Amino acid sequence: MPQYDLPESELATYRTTAQAPDDLDAFWADTLAEARALATPPTVEQVKTPLVGVEVHDVSFSGFGGERIRAWYRRPVGAGAEVPTVVRYQGYTGGRGLPHQIGFLPTAGYATLEVDSRGQGSGGGNVGDTPDAHGHGPSYLGGFMTRGVLRKEDYYYRRLYTDAVLAVDAVKQLPGVDAERIAVHGISQGGGLALAVAALRDDLSAVMADVPFLCDFPRGMVLATDGPYLELAGYLSSHRDEVGQVLETLAYVDNAVLATRATAPLLLSVALMDTVCPPSTVHAAFNAYGGPKQLRSYPFNNHEGGQFHQEALQLEWLPDHLR
Image (cartoon, rainbow, N blue to C red; front, side, top):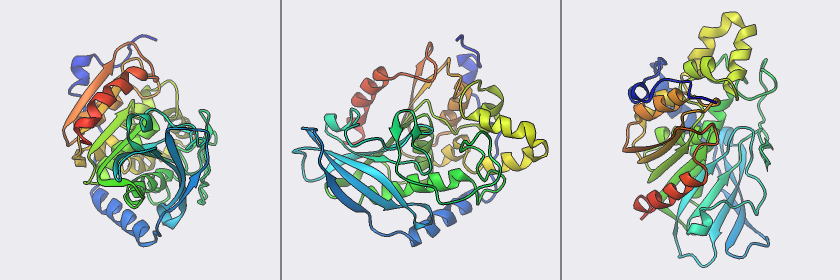
């Protein structure tokens, strides 16, 4: 796959055409206040696994509508009384996985909260355990991108963003977590969720978003040749008179719009041959981001991004922000 998007000189200054709705901040403030009013304390239960160096706990916490969201809380064995913690979000169709799927962060001394994605968890090898209790109107190919997309109040990602924000509320209540040292991280959809949480909270120590999805919908829908943006394009190819309504809803969850509100330090990665999350959509969010930021670009990679090279960079970068 060749590089197909804007040249790097133009990517560095590219901005989305999406506009922030007048009631964007009020919409999210009300949404989160309603969810928090229904929240109850998280539950935590240790799980037996064959792992030697990591403790695993099954967590349930309140998300959108007070509905319970599942997560794995993992903590290095022998860690101090309170350790820095990274809240992690899943890629599209993925779930929290199995107890032993620990990733690299707990072996580097960090606790993690691996958050399930409601209604997802049947793709990418990571199973999920959290249903989405809400029905929806017509959707494209059974995906999540078009569920409730005609109304911001009904849209699937209103619920998923709320779950992601309240996961940070929950992790601060868990035993052994340093509530003053919390980071968020994700890849693809997970990266988009990390950016959204950064925009909707002001108490994070660090944000790591890799090849993020959910950025600059107007461009992603017309440029991506693979992945979930095609669900939106496919839907609008049939619902030809709903383009304006769909774009209006998407503006409330577009990270190229929300990112101006973020303040926490950001480490972001982009792949310049990415056909799922086109490079310009990622740059739109990065260029709009309101806090300190650092970008790592992978010129010859598709949506796999930096993988282990990016993890190595994160292990160097993260201690400066979770010191």
